[in-house]
Length: 415
Ligand code: GLU
Image (cartoon, rainbow, N blue to C red):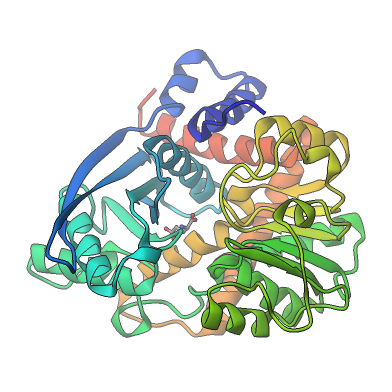
């Protein structure tokens, strides 16, 4: 397998789409580059009294359809190219979900697992104050992502409000409920993905009641996916894996129990009544639904031909390389591509923004129903493009999303 660069991969995916839509080179160039990229140095006082300088980025990819929107990741392996790719995917995601937002993403190179609460608070506050000039409710609205959470969003909102001199709840989403968060935001990524899985299962004639599911990644998205797959549809979760190890049980794992075990011991590994399974073996299990819910590039040309799942639901961003995409398409796997499958998170973030503007709270049922409608529409728009252009689901999702972004750019007179 060649060294994978996520930004180059996102451009390869885009190129396929602009070719199909016969767009000229100038349009490709406009879509293949972020409109703004900010790099910041973040000096933070550590608990031992020393100063440590972290590196952070915020990329605003395209705001033709509205303020840029996207999460902030805290990860030791973060790179600006990953953030650029993720910002591009946010642009296509918001367009595909048909919400009036553009795409952005942020990242800080750090290992939150080795930092105290105080250090994380100082880093969160430093990061938002360093990018304060370019973010804001009408400019760019961050949210949680890999290894960031509602608590950090609260600190960032508070810091930004201090700079602005007034409460600015709308600067960030994924906040706690007490300060403008939305009901239903916590499990929105997983729930939205499962609504898409329901539609996909219907398409291929798969009964989800009793269907087997394997999940790679047991953070927010992965653990809620396990819990909801069981409670909404009666699926059987046969294997899950996190950063430190994997577990398998053919009669079905109790997803809540596995989550509790991870909360107590730092990993699902060792949960009573299960056997260990490696990450590689989990991906190649003979299951109905495989859910990659961790990081990029786990399904590659090295393992794609060994995948036996009928449906792959990409809750992670960028889990499949372009080479693997070709292989999976040929072998008939029904793949729900990342920026369709995990669009539920940003969709409920958008609902949170709307509620903040109106200073009003929606009921959980209202959030779920509206999320279901958005996911179902996005899934069927993609499927239609898939049939119309005879392309795989990822390229079809690009065709729909890029078409909408280009329409907005044209209407604004950018081209
Ligand atoms: N981080 C999530 C994503 O990748 C949510 C972004 C948001 O809510 O703005 O879609």
